Image 1 (spheres, one colour):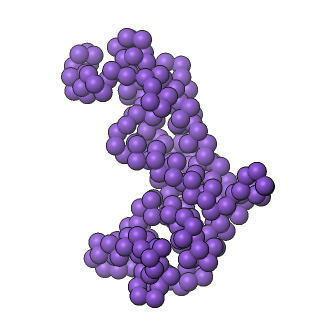
Image 2 (cartoon, rainbow, N blue to C red):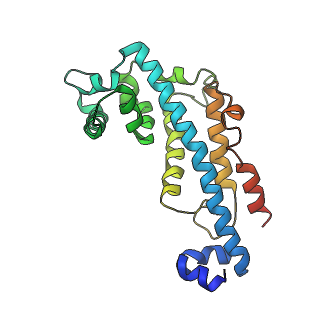
Image 3 (cartoon, rainbow, N blue to C red):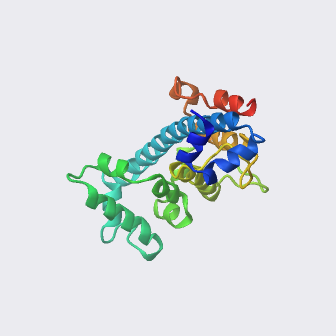
Amino acid sequence: MRYSDFESIMTPARMNRYLIACRGNSRKAMTLYRKNLQLTQELFTVISCFEVALRNAIDTKCVLTFGNDWLRDGAIGGGMFDNGKCRMTSKNINEAMGKLNNYTHFKLVAELGFGFWRFMFAQNQFNATNRILLKVFPSKPISTPALQYNNTYIFNQLAKLNDIRNRMAHHEPICFLPGQPVKSTTYARQHYNMILQLFQWMQINESALLYGLDHINTVCNEIDNL
C-alpha cells in the first residue's frame, strides 16, 4: 500500500509521530505502525494471562478463608465489603452480579475486571480481607527499611499494568518514549519484565505458561533495529 493511502485511512495526525520517529521515511513509518500493533497484541496476551492467574490466585486464597461465595457474600448486608470504605468494591460486585443470567461464583470472578482485582490490594480492601492477599506472592522479596514489598507496592505495580492495558485497549502506541515521537521499546519492555517478575513471585513458571505465546523480545528487537 502507498503511504498516502495508508495515511488517509489512519489519518495524518495519527501517523505523524511514526513519520517523525522514522525521520520522514514513510515505508519505515508504516512498518513501525504495524510492528506496534504486533507488539500490542503480544503484550496484551501476556497481560491477559497474568490477569487470569492473579484473579484465580486471589480467589483461591479467599475461598479457603471466606467460603465458596465470598464475593457475593462480601457485598450483601453485613458482608466484609458492606461499609463506606469499600463501597465501590461492593457496588462493582453487585453490578457484575446483575450482568449474569445465572449466577455461579466462577462466572462472577470472570466478570470482574483487572481494576477490581488491583483494588483488592488497596488498603481498605486489603484490611477487609484480613490482610491475607500477599500470600498470593509467596516468593516476593523480604521488605527492607528502604523498600517495603507490601500491599501498597503490589497495588502500585498493578496500577502500572492497568494503565498500559488501558492504553493498548484504546489503540495508543507503546513503541515510543512516553509523550515523545521517539522510537523506543523501553516502556513496553519495562512492563513486560514487571509481569515476568510478578509471575515469579507467584511461583508460576512463566516460560511454560507463555510457551508459544510470548514473542515480545523478538518484536521489540525488530522495532529497535528498524
